[in-house]
Length: 231
Length: 231
Image (cartoon, rainbow over all chains, first blue to last red; front, side):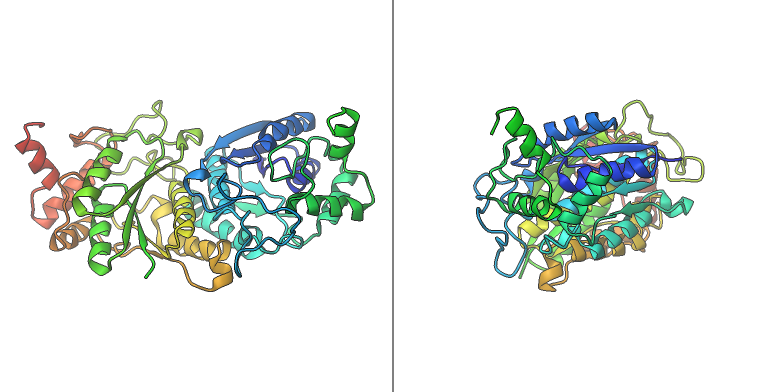
């Protein structure tokens, strides 16, 4: 049985995906990207979460500050506060990183191919963040087809899959699934601002707070930070 | 009019694509990748060729040695000599870099999106190298659809294009087109071995030699090297 690769930022959704993959089958590899994100703390925290989950963890680097055009990779562009819908004029929000998930999935597919893995699992979802084009079902399906056309899968006929089990779920539903799977959210970081202690005001923080409120549980990250006196 | 981005390795095909793009329309940007290729000389030579063509040149880095699995990025895997068809067992040759063009096109699309460019032009072709899955028409079409689904094009409806004018041509036909366009091949490097003076024995050298022989002209790179006493 070939391993599955989890696209693992260490946030809420991909932490749930990690535990979902673990439950479903044995061979799981966690893959995190250092893409020059402002919130680099997520890399260290992702390593901690993967370790606590007992899943082998790999970090790949691709410098998207070369590309620019986003508040997440360009220090000159501010992360909007107190606005869940910080759009550009009729387009994606300024926290959209141009075609980020296209680049990350392409690299993950290359890495998977070189290791004989036949699947990438993502925590993508669109209900709470419909304005990021690169997490939508149409994009994921097209990317899967591209991988099957552009790798050795084109010769072997052994179909490569991208599996996004939560793509049509709300964040609170994803949290509920994770809690049932005993997902460890105590080191999962969502905040765009780049600190272990969340700012509480960016769109990622606002969405996360709502998700736990709707799920009716305390955020395990907040609980840990409170306990450790970090907050 | 938005600019077009030429995926520009500095080899025979992409040099032809550069001149083809220049002839067709004004705004052209050349984009070269440092992906950790063994034949790194092509980067320096690509810069020279773009400069001689008067086209703005950008270098992006993405380290595919992290991915491995290819003779072009792993010094421990030898580049085969005297074999135009150095396959693995029923799959792509060992000089295939797992999903390389998937990664490079994804990054090029991100870079293009951040700059408002609406097209990538490639020198891909499959007649002489049918065993690289990531230069085939089916792959290119799927990648174009993926970019349109996963970038702001999904919202604007302004279609992003990948144009591969030579995809069904033989290398000798590509050379003939380039010569008509006054393409400057004197600094174009094809050899996988990583020297300005080609080894003459790898599959890339063998294909190139045949192309110029069939086109009935001396290779301008060889002519220059002879003139400069480098060969």
